[in-house]
Image 1 (cartoon, rainbow, N blue to C red):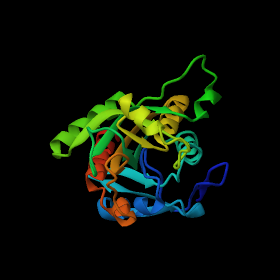
Image 2: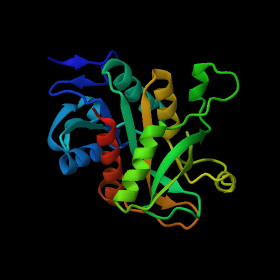
Image 3: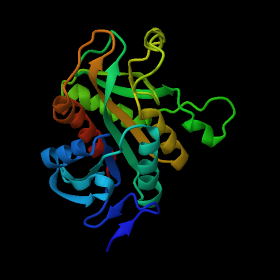
Image 4: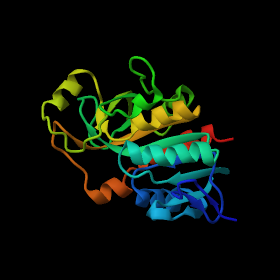
Length: 242
């Protein structure tokens, strides 16, 4: 029997959605993760080509689904997964542009929290500024998993931007000076949404390009070569799942 979200953005036509969901921006990366890492993956969503799959990893059910680009797109899917499909935890697996000398191409970044230029958090009507942060238990599991897998993972703050092409070229140096490891477009929205829904979230990122060295991965590499990030995320999901 089909279960559909109120907005008709998610329609579970086969299988089910697990309690823990990995969420890349690119739906084709969701397909790659499902087919490469999950046992017996079943596609549960094809609405708007935002592919979603559920399978098992080391005996536990794990789902993976695309979010699209930017906070508004991720916020829609994350809210529906949390509130309408009873998901407990979402782990973003995405790409980011390096800012700090502490990170290099293909390094994994585990985001403690996310500063942002987005007004998305104003909807929660908190005096001052509500700082969106990761679930600590999930963050600790991911750091332990990275160490066990011998993955070079850097834990620290990231910056979430509503602009991919920011009109002020000086902003990257300012963010770098303030200790931001990398810039991307979704983490703050995920952390805010999780807090608002009283659920868990973590963002694990791969440095796909560095804004100060000029190095960059190809589109194909971004889709299929983020194995370290994916394995850390899967181990974290396994620890988080019941």
